[in-house]
Length: 419
Ligand code: MLT
Image (cartoon, rainbow, N blue to C red; front, side, top):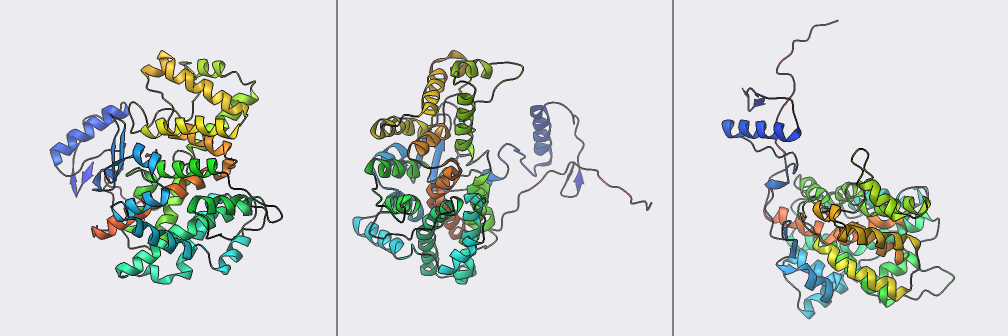
């Protein structure tokens, strides 16, 4: 291995990933140059005062406030303010923030022309990422790395205001319907639901149960420290890219099935079980099959070792929402059976295969009438204030451009011999 021009011999180059990691760690202490942690990539290099997460204890706090209290008692806009500005707003600050967002919910009519260029087969996440990046064309001042504090704040407000509009329009495009313009007398969540579901020729009643559930879901997804999309936003932003393009990159990262796509995978798995006759016990037995285990989606979590604190809150919300809406969906019954098995079956308990936030969020979104293709978009809507807060923190800390270190494992030197 070559590190900073010096070559080091590795005693063992074959074996399990763990063995390799140990050898590389030995090498690290020998060289003193680099910490290789391929599990976490470059994210361990980030200092942040936004979200505290303890995977062993299942603790999640935004700016010191427990997620449980925020999900039960606050609004998504209040949490967005908390994440972005570092403190809970006074009533007056909240009113100003809310009104500023309302002023900017419309997007330039030329954006509709870009939207019209997408076929209805385009995935809403692709449209969202493209249109958020396109905001740089309408607000080129966002490209200036030396923007004043006030100008940066206007960029933040515009993004908070316009992303729900673009998100709802990406859905309307996918079903070939005309878009709905924002109704600014409505609150943030209700306005989004109006833009999603109002049909031009009919009255649309916004159900308060749906608004409350959506508010909670968005709060639970608002930040999760240095995950794939968030570190992408910070990394892209560290090159002084505009907030719009940094968040657009984060949206692309979130689109990946292993990140934001996980709750969609849960619903697809439930559909698969239903199509097979709906026998959840059969699939639970298959999940335990040593040779060819069936992968249960939405179980366990990379950082949470015992339980996902968001799942505890969301499970309660899922029960309340399904009861309040009187939803009768066979897929949801299968989900309940799987959940029951995971929480009581020793095999699952021993392996800490508990249902995570993605297991329940898809179930609630489905009960709220949100189509599966929109699940990741909903995640992006919730994660937006977290991305903004992380981008802002990175800029305010004047962090240098990101450049992950690598350990070179290729050929040391080769001579080119022409053919
Ligand atoms: C998230 O909320 O971002 C996901 O749970 C993924 C993660 O944190 O790694």
